[in-house]
Image 1 (spheres, rainbow, N blue to C red):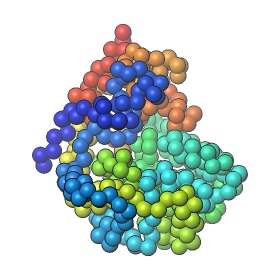
Image 2 (cartoon, rainbow, N blue to C red; image 1 turned 180 degrees about the vertical axis):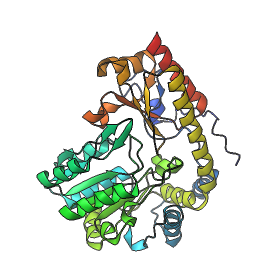
Image 3 (cartoon, helix red, strand yellow; image 1 turned 90 degrees about the vertical axis):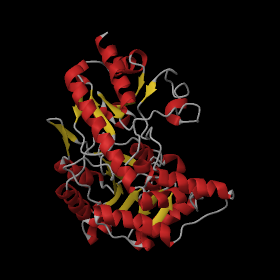
Image 4 (cartoon, one colour; image 1 turned 60 degrees about the vertical axis):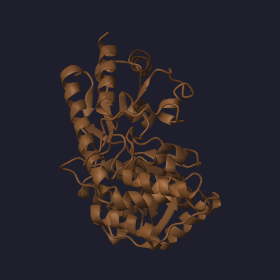
Length: 390
């Protein structure tokens, strides 16, 4: 395919959150960052060409999408996941986290309970608490190195707390689960039984390792589609987070109306020109690049797995089924949170995501981003090994 994912691209000095803001974020300036979920790879050439065309045109006025945009997005989800959508379901937002906040505001009131499954992507907690809602956690269970849903606890928490809304992370960030069809259906049955609406964050759906399959939650039945807000975006798949474009699908017209009302109340209307152009290009012509990327990421995963087993057995990999974010179990080092932070930042000179930020169930773990050239990943693991054994 001719894509060079081994190429190291210097991102410093580009106002890059990952590389240029260590000091502002309380880290030492010489850390090697493998934290925030963007990639150190240039995006697909096809996307770059579209953006260059838009830049050369030189007029950056108000812009909207036409039928070709919807066809690109809907065609991708039909080809890859067998999910058929309608243009009338689509609401475009500047990001999935923005959409989560809008859904919390649209479908709950202050003091209502919103359920999530920790350890989970930390903005889930923020959009609940920052909007004056009550966070209810049904923690995932780690059994023999594999996370499972405690369905009995899930239902009990909904019933006892009169939960109105459930934020589903699918595939799950950070533990890397790709939920089985039966798991999603059982979640759906419980939510239907208690009248709970579901916001399904499926931003990592394109990153699933062999032997696993992503199911769009809303595609499983018309009844589930009727209670679901599906959040999608090309940002993780094609490294476009800075262009702020997400596609939210809501087939229930009443839910869509309430959601759009909150978006309007936030003062938001059209997406930016470059985001629209990049998204359409990604879904029209980015497939070959993505195939190469996924093959490379599988190699990175194998490298980490083998390295830890051979050289850092105290740190255990929670085997991922999807995403390019690995969940590492540091508990074998028997360190406190403060000691582990000192080990990682000051001695290994790394910047990872502490598991504690994903909720109390993440304490003792770290999230590491493997979407980088292998030599960067090897350097990071070598620094970690030297810090552990020095």
